[in-house]
Figure (cartoon, one colour):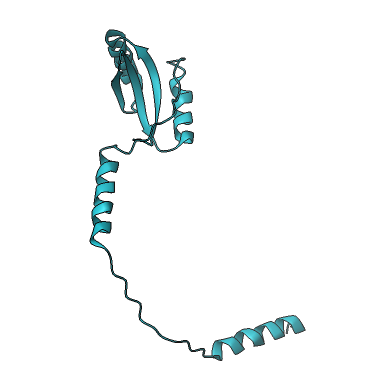
Length: 129
């Protein structure tokens, strides 16, 4: 037979005593009414996320220059990597951007891999639309 310490006996008595204790509280009803505009805003936000219109994603820039060279760079990139890529025109030059990363950490990890083939790649600061 094991000996129980006084602390263990007191602790078990306290726990068992609380289990028999019945507490009551005031009951109240809470009515929450949802504004119709809230559901419309949530739908709009979901659509913007699908279409990537929010603009707070990180991208990696591979190239900045004329259209012909941009096409060559993007072909070379697509043969080596799977991240989404696009050519964006900002007057008067074309930019090759890759990825839609949610965090800077994700973008940095991808950048380490991409820099092996494209040493001048970098992460520009994302713009909010």
